[in-house]
Image (cartoon, rainbow, N blue to C red):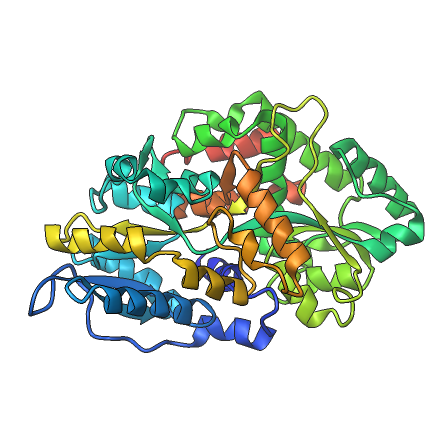
Length: 448
């Protein structure tokens, strides 16, 4: 679970145009660590502490934001520590468990945040956001889902968004005389059309498991709406037995049996970007993947992206489904929480940073320069002049218009439940278990 998550996380914060070598460096480059950490303030007055991930492109953007805040607030200082990805996950869990967390906790929200809430280790920010409505109102509303536990807000959304996108090869579509799908029924028709032409309808890195999960996330949402998975997240008994869930699992296996995916998809890996190569080389017509795929295809696909060969869209509606087709899934943001063990002075510094330092005008520009879409309403005004403006505007539109931006399931669930989920998804896609068996297996770990 951890190695898979690390690999994907690396790309979540990376530039769409960043060279792949620099992207991979984010996994293994440890940034400069300044003295600090722990809940206590330093000498000479209270100092808040802040730990976050090292490596490009995020570390320099995060560091610069803190430095600007410290310069503007000489009596409200933040001491920062940048930590390598794998080490950070261990370090932050250990520190929080020992009651020695930094004042400001950088994270991914969802299941990890829920565990901190249940242990009483992070502040309830609900009333603070009520009192500071302007701070909340400037952020994409959909980003708050992964920051909310049992109806209360425990983290501030920050940084950028990465929705899951339906990519397609325009040149292959033109070759067979096809149009992008406007409904799930169209997808099924396209499966037949592309198979008849000897082209795989969809690329899929099935060996990586989490890539399969993106299909289920959209099918659940488009058939039954966000309430279906929300019941799982909330720990409702037998939530996976929802009729909409069973229907989605059944449709998934029907698509597999109809040869909807590249032959041998269970041996294709996402870490090697082989699934994306299948799309830009024309061996597959479509692919469901994170928005970070744009930069990988741009870096590795030769003239495919620059020549206009890549198309993109949100996942289409399903006839008769309850889901809102403007909703999306993926990574609605990154998140900052405040340690409940911090002193009142440290907490005030953190809240001041949330108000005036997080995603200030300069930070937004810096994220856009890395190819990211800040989760600030109106940040699209910064895209003009970028060679990636069309795609950036698309991502902005999807993220800002989504009433619900659901977090990826393996991030929303606890590590224990997430591993069982990924294991059962692999079995479902290999047709070795039925939809009902999948639901039964997953119901056994609800709330664990």
